[in-house]
Image (cartoon, one colour):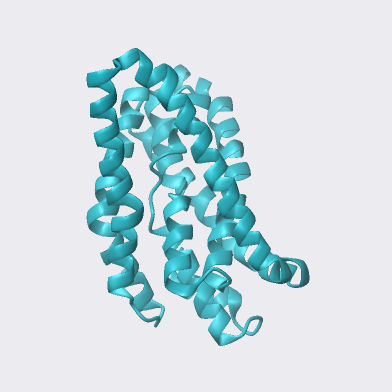
Length: 250
């Protein structure tokens, strides 16, 4: 979501310093394309698994090489300081290192245990660990942001508006464009889903690294996380209900 749009929404309602932190959190969130949860959305909308995998791999490359320049550019438009070193370090810590460990683990598992053990044992166990880690992160964030959430619900409302507009707007563009291009529904659905969703694990981590755990930037990313899940479920429902439009067109 463009920073100037958020500035109009936040004007006269929030202090300048907190406003800047909310803008930064929105930038962190909007600039990080989804790399994980899109598998869930694709599965629920019966998307093509192979195409979804290619999308995720492409987004990983985008984050590695373009996340820092994009965030820096958008922060600059919003008149915010650009912490290059922190952004680069965050990408290394939360993308490069986990990706490297994941690749090394896959190579080791295939060599020592085999593909069946990797897919049916290791991946299932790691999936549970990932969910627990995310829940713990959210609990810690809410413990630090509890006062703002309880006593400033209007702030949460103002943050939720642009995030919702952004998600539905991007989905509409990608889904409609796919229809006009006469793409099959199994491609159109995941293409629209991945465009509308975000890599919220990275954005929360970057917001904390740059502004701190109890900052407005961290709160903005958390609001984005909590809002994205129900919105994405609604988009899955829309995609499934409109599947016949793509089939009839054939």
